[in-house]
Amino acid sequence: MFPVPADGLLLPVPDDDGAPFWAYAARGELRVQICRDCGVRRFPPRPCCPHCRSFESEWQKVSGRGRVWSYVVAHPPLLPSYAALAPYDVAVVELVEDPAIRLVGNLVAAPDAPLGSVDAARLRIGAPVRAVFCALGEGSERVTVPRWMLERP
Ligand SMILES: [Zn+2]
Image (tube, rainbow, N blue to C red; front, top):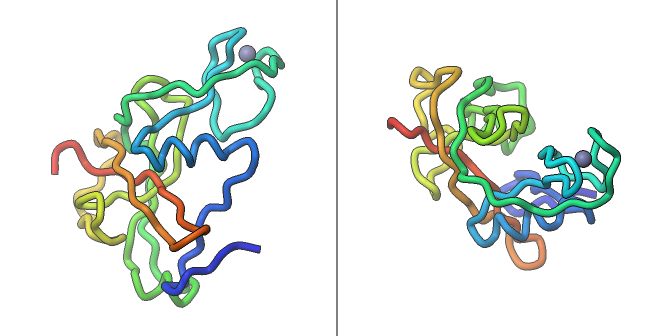
């Protein structure tokens, strides 16, 4: 069951493997798992290295800089709460440290700006971006998500 806050937007539900990712995000840090044995980064979080099958890993801080690998601009039909925000972008961002690591998120004009705050006409594949952090939800369901700002607004 996904928590549905008053604004009707669905929140991430951290699981055991991903909990550190969300805890670091709440501190304003973007971190990804890196294998202690072979040094390959991986995302999404999981217990075992898909490269060498090691269970030894740590959470490596990354710069938060990336590039737009792909994006879409969402339009209705959408769930009602999302339709109210449309049009807004959903981007896949590759990290500069490791383009094989891609995160899905939204581009925003400022850390606390709403979805759809970046003019879709300005979006380009390859555009440099940097992570910002936005706290969503209330109480025990509060979660901080990474979002992305264009490096050249
Ligand atoms: Zn490994």
